[in-house]
Image (cartoon, rainbow, N blue to C red; front, top):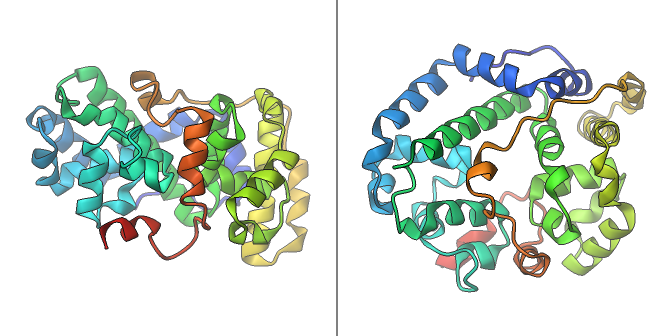
Amino acid sequence: MTTILSGLQPVPLYQLISKNEAAYVSKYVAADAQSKNDLAYFQANAAKFTTVDSLMKDQRALGVVLTAFGVKDQQQYPALIKKVMSENPLTPSSVAYRTGNSAFARLGTAMGQWATPPFANAANVKALVAAYSQNSFETSEDNVSPGIKAALHFTNTIGSVTSIAQLMSDPLLVKVAVGGANLPSTFGTMDYGNQVALITKAIDLTKFSSAAYVQHFVTNYLVTNSTSTTGNTSGAAALTLLGGGTSATPPDPLGALYPTAGVASGDLLSTFYSLNSGSSSSSTNPTLALFA
């Protein structure tokens, strides 16, 4: 996988990318042959995918869709993914509702139960291409600088989060929140009620309206993450690198087209997450129990 910014430590890398992520995404796609080829393939064939079965039969195109929605790792579970893309996530019996996975909720909403082919609209295809490009870039950089993907996701998303329940439905947001707020490393082993109580006390969502605060908070997460993975206790000095400039947060390409996808009421998201409140780093897949 291509990386265009190798060699930088997480904090300076985050500061560099967050100033103009869209420009780095464009450079990445231009340099990465796999991304270019996969996107060209999907765009050439998008109109053919008029049913969930037609998309499921084309694993290459399916991979593009799942990457765009941040669930590429679930492609190995075809029965699960087919259900997610076929169901209304607001239905209590749906996979998205039962597992508490906001990415599943967003994917299901975007597919609209295939009432109309979701990729027949050129604007939808364009948005999906943009999301695929951004997620692929962030993943490539995260492979060499662990924590960057979560950091950028938090930066690009936290401004639209209006409740703790909504934050708790997104494992990457939770990961940054725990590190940025210096919450205990045992957070992931706590039950949902205790997690909510702790994170509610530690985080004031209104503060994230300040770009400077977001950058400081995310930098603290990166320092904490680096310390926990490398044992380098001198990492705290990296906090002094944070400047006062604002970041250029890229728009959410899928959110513009699917504004309600994955953004449900606080009560619904609370239900989602309480059913799947284990550590996101677990090697087991909590959704597999649905297909036992």
